Image (cartoon, rainbow, N blue to C red):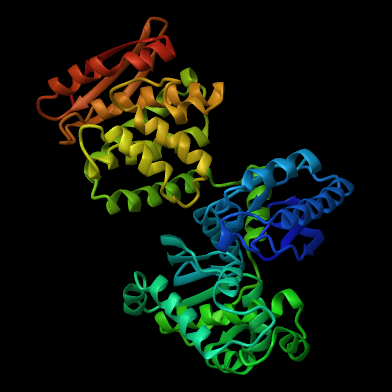
Amino acid sequence: MGSNASRLRIVEADGPGAIREVAALRLPVRLGHSVFLTGRLDPRTIDQAVAALRRFAEVIGDAEVERTRAVVTASAREADNSEQLISRVRSETGITLEAIDGGEEARLVKLAVSRAMDLREKRTLLMDLGGGSLEISELEKGKTTFSTSLEIGTVRLLESFLSAGKPVKQQQERLLTEYLDRMLAPLAPALARKKYDVVAGTGGNFEAIAQLASRPDSPRIIDVAKARALLERIAKLTPAERGAQLAVRADRADVIVPALYVLLAVADAARAKEVAAPGVGLKDGIVYELVDKYFRVWDYRGEEDAAAGAALQLGRRYHFDEAHATQVDRLALHLFDDLQTLHKLGPKERRYLRLAALLHDVGDFVHFASHHKHTQYLIEHSELMGVSPAERVMVGCIARYHRRAVPSTKHTSYRALDLLQRTTVRKLAGILRLADALDREHLGKVKDVDARISREGVTLLVRGQGDIALEIWTVERKAGLFEKTMRKKVVVEVVAS
């Protein structure tokens, strides 16, 4: 469910590379109407959205779908009453609607584009333009090096700066372009410095623009000069006139103009003369992930590494001790893997631990004394590509409890978790406390740790360099949460290197 329209796609798959489309449906529900001005979903729009998903639910039922994922984007994450939409959809259609953040949008779009284009040896600038937001990502050889979500969207721009049903006035154009310049200003210097092999745009508007301003030899390559000329021509027309002249739907005729302004602003900042429109988007990324996970070929470790890369970027923003963070990350994962038969957690929880280990000290940026609390806040309120808001709450809790107080229902975020999630937090926070203790002085003295499980307890075999007495003492002092949760006594043995 986007801010301008809702889309359903159903596929049939014999394997990860054998996907056939069974059904595709698009309903023009402008969920973003008034949200970006009032901060609330319009009641009539909610009714329309629920009716649309009721129709989708019928199609899903008729197709006997085995796996689904339903997401809603910027319009819901910015609306104060988004829970009203989500709860009504759940109760009236049986569909669980998930409000995703810009980082998750960018991750899914990147997945879709990577399947449509070979980006492995290229530097790529990827922009996904929706009704409420613009996700910009930079890829180096197919790996995301930077991603951000900006409050730039076609419906947002239309309702904020332009007049419904009328041509664009000169003053409106000036205000709109000034807004785009201001929003892109933090990125502009970096975009101008780099030379991109590929600049690509996803979303329905880019596909429509490609049909109207493509390069002569390629219908999926937008010629920026032609796009500029197209904007100059159609900005003077009313949406009704655009629809008639361009043969586009009414709900495309009004937003294609702000889309062109965005395309040109980003292309100019990146000094790009053409923009690829690969014809895939968010729904395609969802499909690829569902299918890969169904057939058990999903790269969980690659997903973990990508999330870890995003965590490192966040940590650097807050000037964290990267050497200590990566040391704790390494030791925590060793312990997690060795203790798998004891904690019985899987790849998803391993990723939570890794993110918490990397970010457990970012709160130092705010204040050292209570940095575990500040860490939790920063994690919960920062976008991490591939990490949902609900997952950020889990990671934030794990990181918070790396020191001081143990998990308690007196703490708001922990109290909001269900019993299984609370147990997971306790297990992972217990492991994180041990790993953090093993680098007590932030000097990387511990070179390796192995965990051995016995009936009596857990023995940590520690190999170090130099005097590690303080580290051993700290482990024994911080082992309480682990021992209480796992019901195993922790013993440390120093092993000669």
